[in-house]
Amino acid sequence: MKGRIGRTDGFLAGKATARALFAAGALLLPAFLFQQDPLVRGLQFLLFLGLNAAAGRRIRVVQILLISAGIVAFNLVIPTGRVLLSVLGLPITEIALRSGLQKATAVVGMIAISQLSLRADLEIPGRLGGLIGRSLFYFQLIMSRRSRIDRRNLIGSIDDLLIGLQGSGAAGMEPGSRTQKTTPAGAAVLSALVAVNWAVFVYTLLRPYPLWGR
Amino acid sequence: MPPTSGCLLGTPFYLRMKLRPFDYLAILLSVAAVGAFSVFAYAGRGKSGDVVVIEASGQRWLYPLGQSRREEVHGPLGVTVVVIKDGKASVVDSPCPDKLCVHMAPVSKPGQWIACLPNRVFVRVRGDDGQKTDDTSY
Amino acid sequence: MGRRPTIPPIDGGAPRRDLVALLGGLCLFLSTLEYLIPKPIPFLRVGIANLPILIAVDLLPAGSLFLVVFLKVVGQGLVSGTLVSYVFLFSAVGSFSSALAMVAARRLLGQRASLVGVGVLGALFSNMAQIVLARLLIFGEGAWLIAPPFLGLGTITAVFLGLFAERFQSGSRWLASLRSRA
Image (tube, rainbow over all chains, first blue to last red; front, side, top):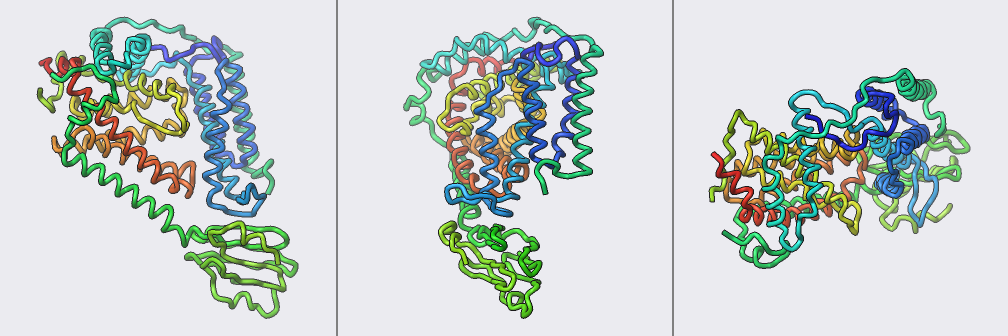
């Protein structure tokens, strides 16, 4: 049984299978995560963010900034390294800052890659896949009935909703629109994306910190 | 059967519901864990959370005493080597003629310092009043 | 009303699998709900998505319970698109250690603890595991600084969740009908 996770349009819709997209994402991951230069990572993150935006996904800038700021701040708490500047009497140290930027970009970058590579029609094979699909189906079913929950009779209304669900599991689910093949154009775009990131990664293996400077 | 209606924060259920003995034990365990982490995070770090300040050539470096490291500091005469180990900082080598700094005892408490005046390197332990004492120049 | 019966499988376990899927979907729904509730502090986590798991401790055998946790975690990852990220890792580690602690608590303590105690223990281990993970992956030594309030808040929310779970358990006709099926 297949369930729709969410949007089926988006990045390379119609031009690549969900599996190809997922494979591309998996390949991008090491080339991103092992990148040492935080500035290069930042650029990579912006690239993935841009691709997500191009795919039509809403970018929550505030959330991204908050998460990043939080992670960097936590790493700056224990000062380490050369003092770069002092903000409100608190020192910003080089090694702590770099560590914080590394980790912050890792988190937001991974989320971006993840959103880029997971598409609604990704099928997970096997019984487990069927189970996942079914639970997503129930999720959407409950979501569609959520207005039945009454705050004044919380337990009772939830109870009723749950009772109402019984027997729905056997009902059919809408097969989402699926892209069957990866077109040459789609394959080219994905390959280029992976290749560029890996090229940059290999370059920084030879010349570490090309942008951060050492 | 107890009524299924009633608002979530209504008092009747919560007053009627009796917590069982191990519920209290679980909560106590959690409180103890919070306490243990508090001690570890806020008080116990007093020593290893202290920061070593190295000043030379117009720059400042900060390092936590708790992490072992070896730093090379550049001055007009050459490289002074500062080592942080076991919560103490010391100078192990310096290009000055009499090497007074190398023979000074390792520092670990706020306020203590080692200086290599010929090479213009100054090593001290920062206390919790942090920035205020940092701003002294020599 | 019996307190610790498990649901015997009918038709080779299909109804139980359906229940597992339903609980998984319920977890997803609750986590979406928690995400949408405006919170004063963005990082405050109430954990209502764990309620179905807490209630299911007395309903399902351990293996099926972990399956629900799996569905919850993977489902969250797929729906929010964060499956391949640290977020997923934290969610997985937190949820699995919570379920593990809850099952162990129930096995060891029997009925001497209510769902409050079980939930509190689950939250304790879940949060401790996540703090260690945070120390290693994203926060560095600074992670210990938020450990006490994080654990403290987690305990408080766990108590309230446990109370709600107990209340739901005693008043739910849905649960009653599940248990009476033989």
